[in-house]
Image (cartoon, rainbow, N blue to C red; front, side, top):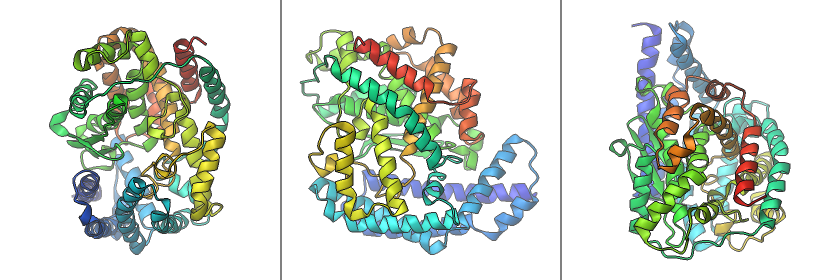
Length: 489
């Protein structure tokens, strides 16, 4: 057996164990009894210890040195294994286990604090998470920028400076569009009751229509919707608000975008580094293009309007045009995951600045709630009314996902580029969407993005699909055109 074959056999076992750890995380968010939180923390720490030992095994260095790749795929496998090894060997095993233990229990503490509307219940645990993440960042950065070291885990090659420059370019046009839209007459929100079971039935039908394979997945409820898994076991969650069905429907479509990326990866990459999405930005491009450019398009919402009349009866909307405006209603709401396309990236920019300050030590945990509330009022013109609508709304910080938030906007930027290329490749896209047909669109994304998994770098896979280097211009042009038409600007 060659060094490359030995390396890949070892790696497949590591990847399989990582999938088991992911399944424990899914169970914790959906099925696990609340009293099991502390035990689950120990279980997660134990399996992280095993994974860290494998990811830092000295044999990896020898195999990487001796392996001779025969093709581009093998070269990419080695690149990703080397990257993982280099990062893992910088982090002490005790730190890796401590992070796994604390972030596992922190999620339950966050959820209870959120339900009780009590920030103080979460702050000591959050402070512990941040201390550990700063320790991890220092080990990875080795004298460099701490936030860059964390961000690189989610979007390889990206830096805070790159993200900040992109945000600075985007903000003026987003604010200008927001001001124009908010000055125009706004559609009234829905005023109807939509039962949970009926919502979930339609959510399942929407998931299948967008290409989700229920023989390799399942749909469950969670406090914060997410997708988990890869290859032949990719699970999604949603949530239900009986006065706001779009919360459920578009959370589902969003997570289906993530899931279809994993389900669409070349099956030959199973249990290898290539068998997962290449970055969170590219991952987010799939969820956002499914949710927004496809799912919220006036063409598709026309089909959706007819479906909802059939399923829910008269719910107070009389035309597909009015329905499209309601689906795309622009308002300065509190919740990022429910934000319209005009406001969404402004939410991300706020979180980016706050968490960057936390990691740098410029903002103390005890001052975070006040900083959040002050910034939200400045950016959105609305005072935060309660913690669940403020700093307790997102699960990310309890999970230790510092550096993750900017990838949401990077994903939107990638989605804007892909949407432009998709429309060129499928000229009758609107006609298909008006019939509820997604096959051509999702097939194009599967062929040009999803099947490659980790084969290319994030920027390269988008450039290869689009025929041009990614830039924020297509996204901003799309937003101006879409909302200009919807609001008669």
